[in-house]
Length: 277
View (cartoon, rainbow, N blue to C red):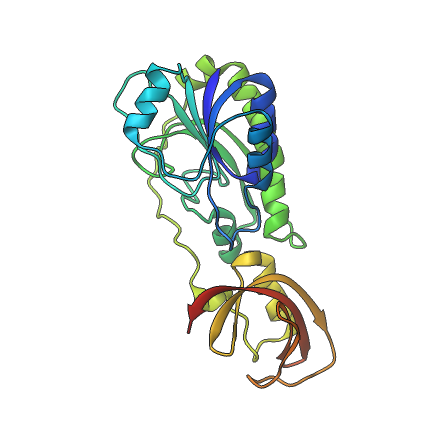
């Protein structure tokens, strides 16, 4: 199939499979520093194979050009930051890989929101793209448990492995899966981005509480230093108490701090997103 691909490194192995077995006409991707996975590898592979790379949003006119002039047979979304337009053309075929068991978990942050809610089982869905976000007919699903010792990155990796198997099956017999897709019979609430307050580390937390926050939200986790908000890229802990107040922050390097909590300290690697609080 001729495919226009939208995504990042979250589903890198899916991209690699499509690259080897189909023709990718273009890659549409994005940059978002708070995400753990970036676009580095899909971009590098695209440039190696001379596939055009775009950071801009696609337009409906451009989609029509892909279908009419380039013969695009499938628009394939796998962890992309923008909603794409849905042409009314009967020739349009588009699918999305979504990291939840739809209809539950409609969200841009399905894994983090699932862990916020204490969900014990999640999975991956491949569904048709429609004008309703994450609302299209389901071509395939896989489910698996979220184990107590797994963090959000573990769950993303499990989703990626399941998505690769599903992609092989769906694209291997695409017409049958497309025609046999199951409508989503329920309309469940959209899971909004977790509030900044619950993802922000504080001095009055314990080490266990801080680790629990980072387990769920990873690089979405934040910390406030000198009135500025920073993303937490790495978290380790120590038992020595350096205090638990705003004055108890020790800069080791510009991007590394020791942050006092009630029963010890956090060793944080941080990056600024420029927000004042």
